[in-house]
Length: 277
Ligand code: ZN
Image (cartoon, rainbow, N blue to C red; front, side, top):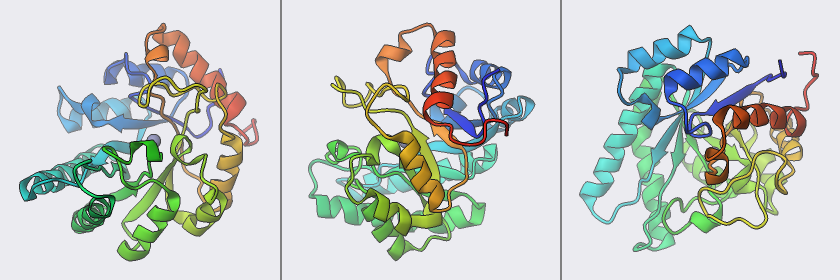
């Protein structure tokens, strides 16, 4: 069996598998963590999903995703807050310690307005997060998504936001796909320190043919994954490493073969720990 120390997999990565299938396959491979996308909770109660995870020795390491705070109208913004509070409830119910926030953006609004609404939105969820003991993990997104997916685009912005909001209930999900290009990467990781509570891996392909669904398997692209891993661990991160790949190319393959390739790629291009552990 391939060593998969600290490996967690997002359910969207193995998109072809429903939750019962995914937990069975992950468990058989010795994987112990899963990033649970909310769609994978549909069709059964939260307690039933939690039992599925427990029965396979899997811990939910994150619930994906909340966010999308900006809205054109007050009612739209309120609906987003309600949905984020529901996401926190779902995370608590399945034992996930964090909700990953894709913070959102509306192209009709200015960047400044989007960013203000995001800060207000996260602030409005903190009491609920605190009551449940679930953290809000801000995931900065690559700037190519600044129009409609997230106006939070760098670790520096995350650090500035958390300087305002406090870090008791708010942290950062650092995804190599979104942060690898940043000339301030090392300094902002150091500044973030233990604020980094999530670490997502995949790779950047050249050329990238689709903004959303053309991520590479680790090792297929140009990201120095081990180098960034060493930086976040140097800053104090020691949590699970979450494989999150959106790829029409890989999703069209045989899912079992793709899964084996994930395990192999993790060992070759992510693992830097003592292999015996
Ligand atoms: Zn991510």
